Image (tube, rainbow, N blue to C red; front, top):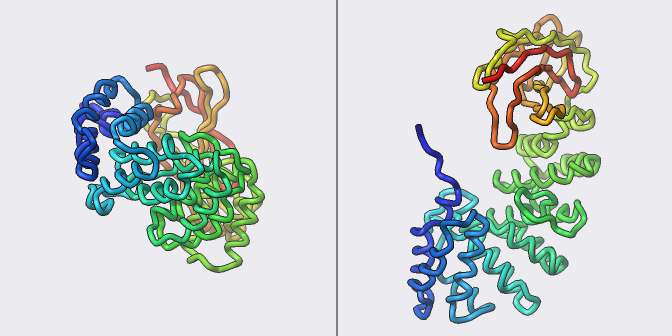
Amino acid sequence: MTVKVPLKETALNAERIARIGREVQTACPEFDADSFVTSVMADLPRLELSARIARTSEGLYAHLPVTGPAALDILLRSLPPTPEAAGVTNDFGLHLYSSHSDYVARYCAAAEHLDPALGALARMTGYFSSELPVRHFLADFPDQTMRALTTWARDDDHRVRRLASEATRPRLPWAPRIPLPTDAGLPVLEELYADSNAYVRRSVANHLHDIAVDQPELVVATLQRWRDAGRAAERHFTTLARDALRSRLKNGWPPAYTFLGYQHDAPINVSPPALERAELHEGDTLDFSAELTTTATAAVHVMYVISSTTPTGKPREKTYFLLRDTAEPGRGLCLAKSHTLRSTSTSKLTPGPHSIALQVNGRRFPAADFRLLEA
């Protein structure tokens, strides 16, 4: 059985702390790499990931012979010439460099250092995404930081452009909220929604998805304006809009379906799901099928909803995408799936009664019951 290594152990460990020390010492011979490594590693093994990042940047601050812009200069010169040369193989970067941008937020977030600090974050984001540190600047220097983000949205590096969107997300996961209006980032998104890079467009979609939690009508209106402008390639725009509205689609919100071309009250009917088994254990596969019929041609967006209760007895629903298709009169559309019943880190299955229902264009159809048995 493969043992999963915790992220904290691969993100910042003895090997990576030693590498940081070597790289910084190359840029600044006065930096005592051995002392830095010894001090940080004295604490690192007992710390979780965020605390490891903070402890490493604290170690840099304690051992760099200078502070402020001079320290930023050393950290920037310590970086390999490109993210690729550093070993970065994805758009997000290496946790190895997470402490560099954390250092900027902790020790350089001052009015007199604002321009070099923000410039450093833009450069560092290619090595490890800087959206968390930028949020500290948005909290303390909102106007100046927003001006920088607007400039970043037009940067040649797609990772910097993506940072402009990601840093201003209202509900960025595992991040502090920023004291700005929910729609404060929309001017930045206006620059980015038609971006040529999928990584950037995905951030725009996630940003809109955050806004839609509180202001779904604003998101639909924004998407409509963008569609009318015709700047974005149709297939790219459709994917962006679908991702932005994904939770509203799960919730069956009619305007989301209408915008994407699915008639909420289309003349369709769906048979109750037929189950191969009605009693299952966790880890088993729930196999179901149903038939969709229509009296007129209709684009259909199909999801299935599994309802149960939490360990505390509260109702719970989980909605999953099934298919998108066009239904035609006289031709039944088979809806079938094999769904593995498995707990996740955020959702533990509870033995007891469950049900499954099909949801088409936001409309919920009759459910079928099944039971999850005790292990």
